Structures are given as structure tokens and as C-alpha cells.
Length: 335
Image (tube, rainbow, N blue to C red; front, side, top):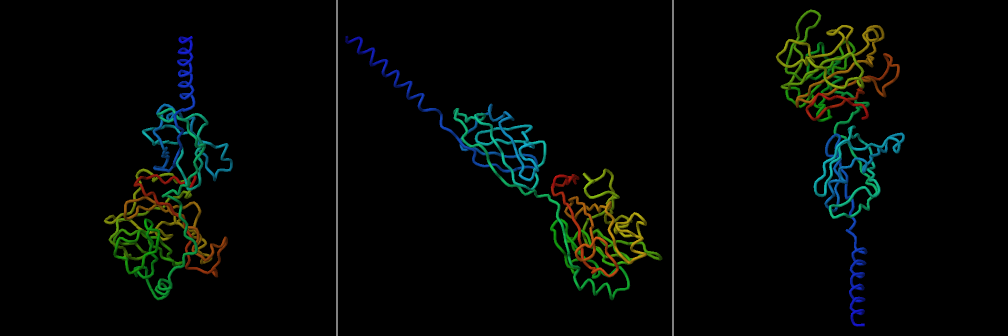
């Protein structure tokens, strides 16, 4: 009887131990945050070390973009994964664009290093791309520039130009003409509407003589391409930006480029109207060495579809993209 009681005690203790082990599984864990750390990389942070094997399985993650017409039908899985401690880096086949996103986790797919299950079903996050297409609308040319144009007899006075920094995204005063603060300048004149690059003081060939055009201490350059803004994915190999020290034209107008200008030359001559051509894009190398592309849309107030000689002028509408990573990548599809 005593032996039997001892056996019962041992069995009871064993049963109790097994029951405790069963009732205390590894603690669950959570996904804490998701943030874009590169153009196509998402960093996910957990509150416990992650199991590398389950974390490296691409089917355990799916990404949805809120701006998609059918987010659920366009879920993306990462193409490669790096997992270490509490962080996982997910690389996707497409670049992130400015939008809201949802990262979903496969149920029962991810485990912690201790064997715990993930309780988080999804993470929502927003991303604003540093390289976005920027638009300038109804930018009024300063009255000081307009007055200078009306009183000027040539194209060499710095006061008749409108100056702009692509890198900074803002206007620059004419008093800064001799600095590197501006990348491009615009002459809003129907008889010689032109764009200039800040490439030092250089000579521009006129009808009868050489004249000095305004320039600063910059090292910017520009070139005109007969392509639509959206079609340009990169800076073409061998592109000759007109830089300081080269006897190249550093302005874009009908006079210097003939029919390969940025606006409709016939409309300018016959109707005294500046109409930008849709399949023209200005490529710029900024003073900081970044590459950019610009599409001029209108030089009239409110961007009328069919401007006339009486349309209110001395306004600018254009869109531009600056690649800030130093590369020649100008692909703006999806932005």
C-alpha cells in the first residue's frame, strides 16, 4: 500500500510538471514599426529577437499600397530578406513612392528566436519620397523684372532675368546673379524667351555680333531634348551639358536652336504667343552636381489651354524632378 501511494505521488508530480510545461508556451511577440530606409528597402522592427529561418521566408510578408486601384490584387512579396536580432530588412522589386502602405504578416508564419508566435497581423506606415516631381504653378515674375524688360534694349542686363534654384526649390534675387545660389534663369520676353544655366559669364551669339550674357560663379549646365518629360528615364550617355569654359550656347531659345526650340516658333512669330512644346524637356546639371529634368507648361496666368496675345503674361508653370543621390536616374514612373 505504501508503494502504491508513492507511485501515485510520482505520477501526480509528473503529470503536474507536464501540465505546467504545456500551459507556459514561449511568450508571444509583436512587430513594433516599419520604415523605408532606402528606395526599395523596408526595415521592420520587432520587440524580441526574430527566428532567422522563419524571418527569411518571403511568403511571410505582403505589401499593399493604398494608392493602388486594387491594393489586395497588387500585393508584393520581398525579393530578398536580411534578418538580425530584432530587425528585418525587406527588399522589394519596386521602389517606394509617396503613399500610405500596409505590410501584412502571414498567420503563424513568423516566430521569435525563443519560439514564440507573432501576434501582430499588419503594420500601417506612410512614406514621402525625397525625390518627387515638383510643380510650380502661377509663379508671378517679379515686377522689378518686368519693368527692367520694358526699359532694356538688350539681353545682357541681369535684372531682366528670373532666377531659380532647382536644388533648393526657390526663386533667387537678381542681386545674387554672381553667386552659385541659382541653377537656371528665364528671360520672359516674346522676342527672345530663353533659359540660361548658371555657368559663369559666357558669350551668346546674336544675329550680328557676340554679346555677353549674365552668368554667375556656378557650374550648372543644361541641354534640350526632343522627348516628353515622362519618357526620359536617365541622362543619355554622352550628353554634353554646356558648362563654363566651353564655347557652347548655354541658353535655349528659338534663335539659337532653330526649330529645335522649347516653344512653338511659328506661334511666336505669327501670333506673338509663347506656347511650350509638349515633347521638349530641359535637362539640367545643377551647381551641386545633381541631374534634373524640367517640363515648361505655360508662361501665362492660370495656364490657358489656348493662350492669345491678350492672355495675362509674366507667369510661369513648370514641373521638375531633381535626382538627389548623384546618379543619372531620372525615371519618374509611379511618382
